Length: 498
Image (tube, rainbow, N blue to C red; front, side):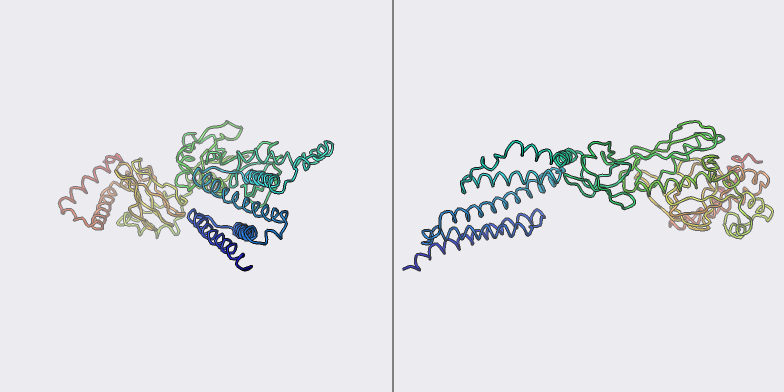
């Protein structure tokens, strides 16, 4: 008979455990469905709360209720509800903040403020439970003498300042932002109500109290996702500003990280005692790559200024001079290379010697534009080292059509006939070119009119090879002869030779 009195309470307790297990599975499923981990602290708190609920259900409905004091039952009930409240607020925090605000609304939530809200809610739950279950007079707990209250407030004033500063900063800064503060630039890797941890470009960590950040001027480099970089450079007065601007603007092309909109710009800043100062400005979207991009820009400036005979004068820095920028390549080592270029086959030794003396060397870095489609051709390029890609701009955009290596050449048709460049050539790696300028070519052809026919014959051979590579039929012999004569006449007219 006594054992029968415990059967119903035991069934009730197992029923509580059973339905609690179903609820647990449902909650875990919701977490996994939203791709959230179900943390260990929630598992522990849920199992303790369920165990206490089942235990209470058994005690209240069994003869033990008359044996155990009401005070003990109230303490167990308080513990069960307190742990359940913690579990409920944690679950609400995950779905309200992590899922809805952060994932759905894409809203940044300041971590310290989130913790404060959690603690406030939990304290309110505890206050309600203390008053309703344990019948504790809360007014007696907070009736602290006024002097003691003032002393505590005075002692905690710095802490309160930091806390309030942390809340203010949480509205404008977040982890991952790049900032400038106290003379250093870095990325925020951690934030709380007391301090901000910033990792600099050198990998050092700077710990900055939040009240110091609020009290001083800070730069937020990622406010709109883009940042403007400025590169100052001085050049000689003998170089026209338009040439310098065109050269500086050109080096910004095809550099990963530099935005095309807003587009790069070049400004004349001042006229100094020794140089004209320019500012090259461009925008980047990833501040963490600023140093690498500036390195690429400054490296390209050196090579571009050397190619274009643009001097950076004393006392700023003298890195090049006209003889370096226009240096004539030594005949040793070049002669054998150029003699293998098909366009020069059949030329006399004297004519080749004249060409060798006029050849210059220029270097282009990866991504730099060597020639651009539709622009006038001014030079004949022979690739000595490196590789380039050929791009055609058509109705459906720009697409690569070929790659060229050492020994290949381009620019001859535009150079010899005055027609615009038919393609864009971009360096695929650091590449060295042998260059023959149009004026030098013109002088050579004027001295040797027979060269026009040789050039026309070589250009036609190249055209036939290209047609065969493209799977097209070669033109009839009569058509080839007519095209050669037409091309020869066009070259003579362009270079004004009889």
